[in-house]
Image 1 (tube, rainbow, N blue to C red):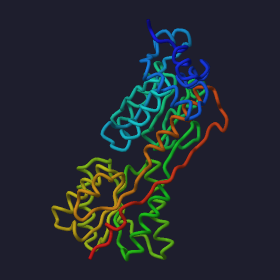
Image 2 (image 1 turned 90 degrees about the vertical axis):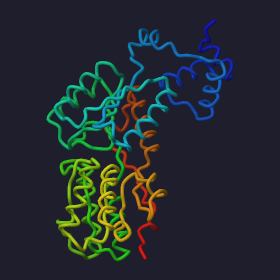
Image 3 (image 1 turned 180 degrees about the vertical axis):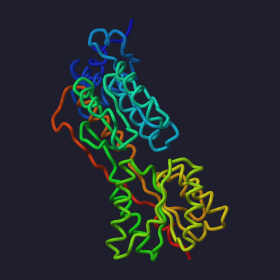
Length: 333
């Protein structure tokens, strides 16, 4: 005989309503009761009847995640945590990538919107041509943006404070006597790139130093472009003494170029989300740690609230802080 929700409730010593709230995400459940319910589910082997529940509730029990690339290590880390968190609330996750192709972005967004209860979305551009349509869709379908932002506040948004993180990073290098700090940015029109540029400039301004625009280069987040831009940076500025790279794969490319040029020992690098490099490189590198688990938790909490029609503080922008790690690796003898 199949295990029922009532069996789970009896085993856990909790009401059926609370078990239902945990499984469907209709209402919050305390961490203690979540643990009791999940233990009961695991012990009894309870399985949610997704098809039957969808028919009764007119719900897909699925949240869509639309991102620019599946090669982005940071986004995949966030997606992995999101998948587990959503599963705990009875939702599947549908992950799609538009491969950085803006013309495909809208098409895939609309296709996904027909098959999910909400969309978690990383937009390609600061301003999209169809932003008003996104706003209209929000009335029927919860949309939560993260990692990037749109020019108009039409959706909930969860961001890491890129401006503050870059300012802290560059300030740490300036404090160590580096005056010529090269920075390899992402696409110039992106929100995060613009915020990081502001942080870079603010660090120089607070130090009373001029900003040399020849030290600022833009790329497409790929390893090859990171390597190429690092080479250009070195050719244009022979006195560059440190480099900040704002994407993981471009960090790999920059390090490759420095190795080829025999400059790894001389020029310290601070990358983004490069925790797995710090303990395998000699010398190590500093890195900006974006709290992917906290980002995932914040986005999932927000999207579940919107699915439950809880529109308090809508639309909201939640700003999380990054952490600068591995600063000891910046000191060269």
